[in-house]
Image (cartoon, rainbow, N blue to C red; front, side, top):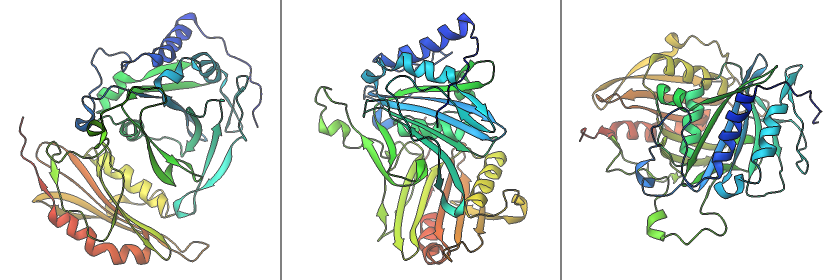
Length: 376
């Protein structure tokens, strides 16, 4: 699939800037671009040294938002800095799809269609570099993606706290060639949580990587709670549903529970989220696509009021059309915030019958929620 591309002329400054971006990945300390403020890690990981690194280049195109992401142990980045930079510099687009030149020794089967929940599809490619500890993926999502949710998802995978819009802008770098403008995210953290198996980054089992080969032994007590929510630091308390399987949590995912049904798993997520009208609208539109509804759904018409721990919140119920396998996807979600401005979303999703059966558990979580007092 890969096709040679004409390399655009880069200015010396841009080339040096990108070289710094990649070369710094082999250092032992985290790096924040265009900012002197050090990365603040999630409370459970505050005393853990960064072991893993992630660099993601984002290209907004009319055909979609494309993500080119490299992740793995920090020591492994040194050997791949130059090939990775060359790969990014070769990216261009033709007929709505990316083209690139692979460095020597790299390989890929090319872009593939991967099925997504609700009957949609994603274009995705995995690239092998010869180092099995390094992962490179190319994925696409609908055009006009908001960067902040993606950046905070990546930070959560590294065991880092979410950032605000302003903090994100300060941390992003940029690389341009004659055809493509790439925004570049880079961060290092003490863990690396990724999705495993076919189905793209939104399907399959979660796997958390621990210290890479050759790293000095780490005290088990220091890593026992990597990525888990620290209830003493969290601004929210709740009661987990009984008889559900508890999944991996992170800086953004405060709770994850699943239950298997005949038509696949039903899932409940408790997420940190910016409590704004814009964030709510974007999420409802994304959930509408998830259940295969029109992406231009009228958010105001489907939004209900919902009280959570005495605070005003928003609620939505979305039911999609029957799919080819005669299942119907459904989503129920509530967004709410505490008086300190911390925002949260509780989301229930799955097959219509599974969602209906899980409403009692969903409501029990809502009823159990109360906010921690601000100790600052």
